[in-house]
Length: 386
Image (cartoon, rainbow, N blue to C red; front, side, top):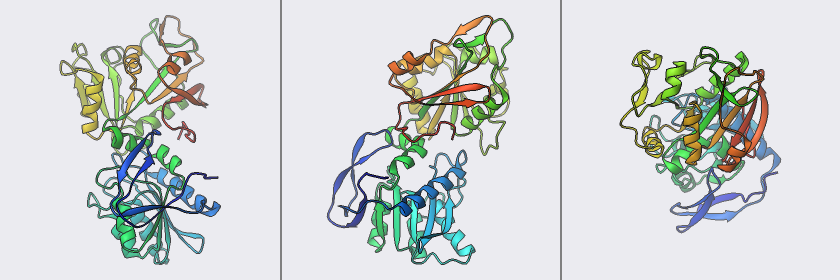
């Protein structure tokens, strides 16, 4: 049951209030001529409709960044008549797709209630404003899961709808929506990417076996999950040692992929060979040599490029640097049953991750391996394999 306050919006004087962000902090937002009032608790049907909007939003995963995942359902007479999601950059937004879906199936959106996971936009970007689409369609009410902290929106979508006579309520399944779109919300808040670390170790915590040539030691099924994770990230980072030892591609190959993530190599001493695969395959690689000054500066640089989720796949030294500076938001710690003959210690264990503010959220099987998912984000409803 959703026990948080339900917000409905009405014409009023300027009102500043506090809203919860994706990482549990509060910020004050000025929403112009929008008032705040209490409403009744959400009904079971309303929660079901918003959950469906969250579910369909997942269809855009890995395809819409730097835009967030967004889903929308249109409801009439307590029945879903249409649904939509943001499917790809430049394509219809969720609200627009839902309206098109209704009309294509012989349903009029006029008088419907729209359940949307993110506050509708009110600006021209790659597509026209979603607020205009909702007004033209004649919807009578809009229920929003999460407000949009993007400076181009920030309450303006809600205000425009309300000014047009459309009732707007906000806050339904907000925590679930914040987790689903956490990279986008994190970037809006900090203007730098959310940092996700992936590390695989053997049964004793070793990342490599120096007794043999460099090779993967995890199962095929586990590798599939790793490529799914890569597909959800905008950039992948490694250090020079990983390039020298493994010569990786760091591309998404085992799942459908709309665009390859940016590769980032930390190489301040310029030790990597110019013939490394990442430098000659024609895909973009950001090679940080003498221009690398600090991890913080690098994250700011990536944030300026609208990189919202950075995956760190480097070795122990690189990973430790991110941990020591408190820069890791999520850690995918994969443990294999194999045992290395000449091990290379990772230096990573539960005590180390707890010490830097991470919490163990879930444990599950990834093929023959066990994934331990750690996070500092609001992860009460997070599914590590989603």
